[in-house]
Image (tube, rainbow, N blue to C red):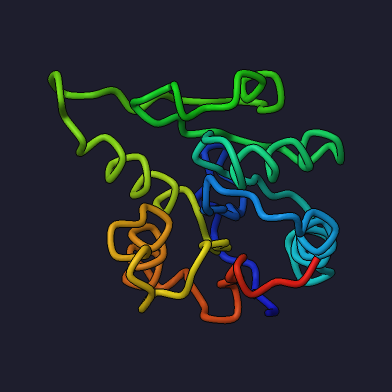
Length: 168
C-alpha cells in the first residue's frame, strides 16, 4: 500500500507506523522479515519515521528487534502486565512509555495501550493470528487495535496479515 506523507503523529513528531500482532509466533520468520522490508523500505514513506509497538512477546518484539538491527527508530508502549513483555524489549527500543493499571485488577490498561499505539500512528500494520470472524479473535487485543485503527482512518485491509494463513 502506498501511503502519502501526513503530518507526524509519532512520539517524536515524525510520521508514525504502528504495529500490532499476536503474542503467538508461527514459523513464518522469513515471510515476516520480507514483509517488514517491503513496508519499511517503501520509497513512498517520508524520509524520517518512527515505528511504535506494544512491547509484548511475539510480533511486538519481532518488529522491535528487526527495527533495532536495521537502525529504524522504535518507540514502545509497554502494557500494564510486564510478564507478557520480552525481557530484552527495553534494549531494542529508542524510547518507551508505560501504561499503568489504574487500580488492582484493572484491565483497561490494555485498551489504553492499544489506543496509544493508534494515536501515535499515521498507518497501522497488523499481524493477527486468525481472521476477525474466528472464535479466538473475539477477545483479541490485536483485533481491538485494528478496529481502533479503522475508526481512526489509519488501518487498511491490505495491512492486515493473518499469521495462520502464511506459509513458512
